[in-house]
Image (cartoon, rainbow, N blue to C red; front, side):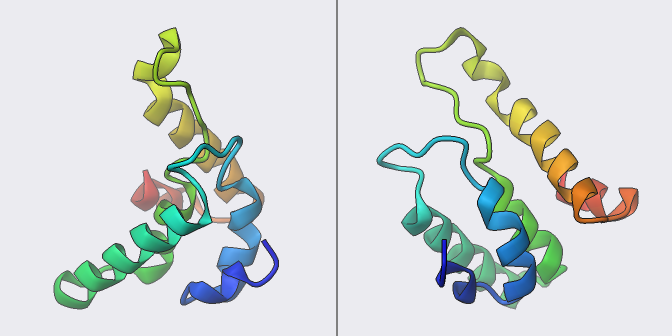
Length: 103
């Protein structure tokens, strides 16, 4: 994702997390989807506030595990994504408290 990280406020964080954003891409979950989500998150944060790094990490990693809609483990997709996101954030040395804000 060469220049895509420039679409995010914290480009260094985006560059670290984007390689983990998808384990598979379907027609609905791709870079354009992430950008739409980030634009919506940013718009809401302008009014509501929030920690932009936490919001950015949550945005980038929210679909980091893809499970087919008809797969038996589909009901656990968000739990699987949260587990993977925790591991990714630990790898980039986020603290437990920072990670908890994303979860």
